[in-house]
Amino acid sequence: MEQDTQKPRAKIAAQLMVGPEQLRHFGEARILSCLDYALDALEPEELILSIGESSRDLADKIVERCGRKGTRVSLWVMVFADRPVGLPSTSFVQDAGGNEGYGSVGAWENIGKGDEKFLFRCPSALGDDEQGIGFAIRSAKVIGAQGIFLDRIRYPSPANGLEFLGACSCPRCKKAYSAWSGEQWPDLTAIAVKHAARGTEGAGQFIQEAGQALQFRSHMVSRAVAQYAQAAHAEGLSIGLDLFAPSLASFVGQDYHSLSLSADFLKPMLYCKAFAPAGMPLEFQLLMRGLEQSGVEASKARDFIAGLSGIRADLLDLVRRGEGFPAALAASEMLRCLRETGSGSPHKPEIYAGIELVEHEAYDTKIDAETRDAYLQNLSGQNIAVCWNILYVPRRHIDAIAASRKDLR
Image (cartoon, rainbow, N blue to C red; front, side):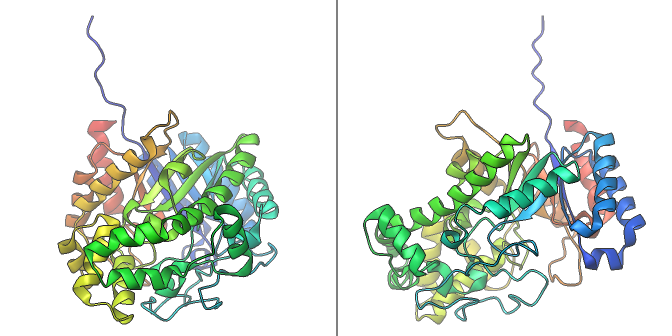
């Protein structure tokens, strides 16, 4: 008797964000038409849905359509930043000088100018976030979603400015760190600048001096995610997580292994071309720029970041010149995801490689057919997530994904 050696089929997730802008521009009928097209062509396992309470009727129609196709729906929820309107306000994270908001050293020129503000709440001030958790669960259940997808589960990125690499330095976080470690909270930004001046050698020295503080930041993020997951799982809801690429994750307090223990699926943002927050080109470019503006020689800043991230120096040179990373980097980052989540644990969540395929006037990055095909070739056999809003993903990209996956389905 022959054994079945067929590999498990690669899965697809898709993201749909419906807000005031999309309702004005598309209208309900066109939104549903775009959804139907994606469901028919891609047959996704997961739809990650962001939609406001005022669009309850449309949400019901979206969930009903997904149910007919066997597609699960996870409600897209913001945790530390851009939280739902109506939740109590808490204090924002602070840099070493006690400042809130945005930094000025290497910060993205467009930070805070759009609907997404990227102003991060202090994890200590949020505490157990019972109201945020309760709101997320109620909102998911009222529309019949099967899960919750957590976004903004991190500290500020380089897009917010190099100053916030050391967040959070508020009195409450300093006290929590002292109780956790027995030590005083350090100025992580100053430590990074000091060691970056030594280039590759400085990377190891930075980890040695700052490692415990970095672990504490990861602990605070993982703790919040675990609280959401425990409550969601008790209600029969799954948990998905939106994560920075592994090479960037440690800069924003995300530890893949500990986070994976709470998750049913992960969506690492393996955006190799996007010059937008969470896009690898923008974040690495700004991180190096921030160090250079702090007095670090350009080559030393590059080598320091290469040592911390595992990204080759010649690839970092590409983004310093305003170019993107090659699509092959998405494949190597995906392998890192699999390694970092699979070590020493029987629990292995599904991982969807997030690739940016949107075309929108607000974003400079446009993904052409050659880049799209390079992504699909390098991620052949892997789960992928079509990001970050199918309303702006051209149908030629959806058709190409569907065609490339036929042999795997």
